[in-house]
Length: 201
Image (cartoon, rainbow, N blue to C red; front, side, top):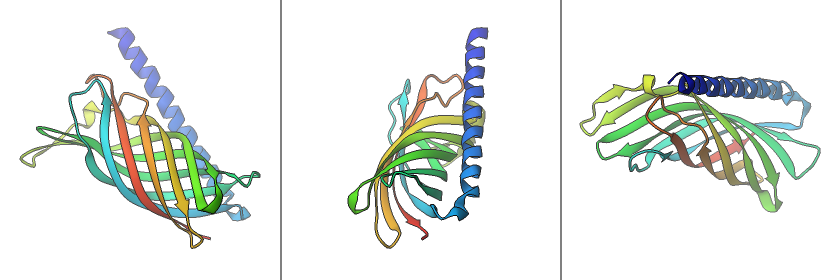
């Protein structure tokens, strides 16, 4: 029991440090936005969220995401770095109700810029828990924040298209890498995202 608690504590420390690192990186990136090789943007869209791992059969919870991005051009014209800050409604649906787990997510993406506006992207994402509730089939909500860990670690894979107007579309899959629960088993987030974004030029 003690060893299990120590392992959970160490994992929590690692994820908290990762969150602090990504936040610090985002602040540093924002400070160079005036150099001309950085473009700011906004984004939003639909989530199809569920769980992977040791969990009873579940289906997707339909939600949304909205946030901002910083697109950084590198010395290689085919490569860019894109950190984001995104509010994301996640969780999963079950026969008796729905987990409504919401995060502030900070992905830090490496992008390959193809011809014609095509983009491929991948990178780590750290999430900070905002709220956690279970809503039963009668519409009654129960606070379950004490059952969910304060941070989440995942890896993002995506593709997108940017038009010459600055408007773009993207699709992304966020694969959960860490157990998000406290003692409910090995439960990891699994989130598909489809949306629009706009880069100011």
